Length: 127
Image (cartoon, rainbow, N blue to C red; front, side):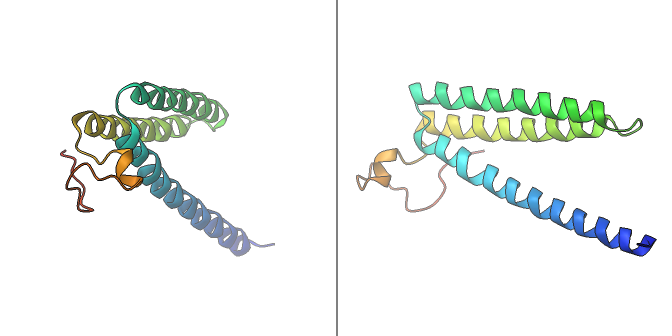
């Protein structure tokens, strides 16, 4: 195996890393915050946000551990990446929960065929 083979392998690994990141970003940005927006009103908000806080703790633990394993000079990067994602997702969930509390989103009843307002398939939340 020569250096060019190693470079090709590295390029393939980086490609797959980008693919994985894209899928995680798409899934994390659409599925769960949308569920919080639709179903996260009242008592449900507490339980939905509990899981957000637990996920943030896991992010801190896993990326903190990865930082300890990383070579000197780049140790901070796993933790920085984790903190950026935790902050962005926390903001997404908080925004979705606020929309649910304000009634800016269709309730779960809309999904069951009982329409409680003119959602019209358009996003109604305000930034």
